[in-house]
Each structure stands twice: as structure tokens, then as C-alpha cells.
Image (cartoon, rainbow, N blue to C red; front, side, top):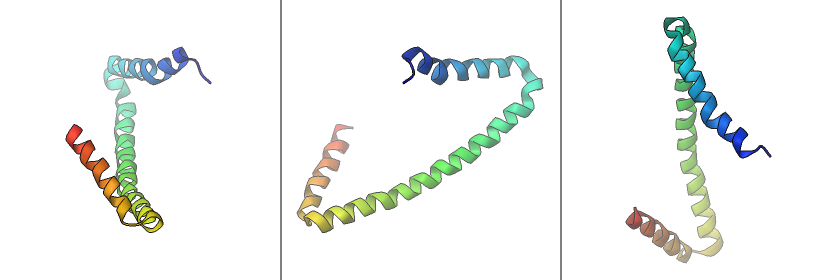
Length: 88
């Protein structure tokens, strides 16, 4: 298991240093900046796909719970959702 310092460096310091270096290079780094921009578009499309599929997973979980424990279990789930929305 990596140490906290190594994890901090990988997650926070490396991207900040990389972005700062790209910014300092200016037009020389334009190809890299364009590549990162295009790659981020791909990752956002992947996330949109995953989010759409997550709905099917939730519906499957509700169907399983209802089939296994009956309709009365939906009351508890509804109460949980209600408490969540009231707290936010």
C-alpha cells in the first residue's frame, strides 16, 4: 500500500506541475494541450454512458428487492430517499 505522501504527490502535485509546465511552454505545448482536450471529450462520453447504464442497475436492484422482500420494502427505500432529499 502506498504511503500518504506518495498518494498525495500522484493525485495532486503531479497534475499541478504538469499543467504549470504546459502553461509555461505556451504555444510549444499546443499539440499536447489539444490532445488532452480531445481526450477529455472521450472520457466525458464514457462517463455519460456509465451514468445512463447506472439507471438500469438501480432498476434491477429495485426489481430484485421487490421480488425478494415484497412491495413493503419499497416503503423503507422511499423513506430513505425522502430523508436524503430533506437533508440536502
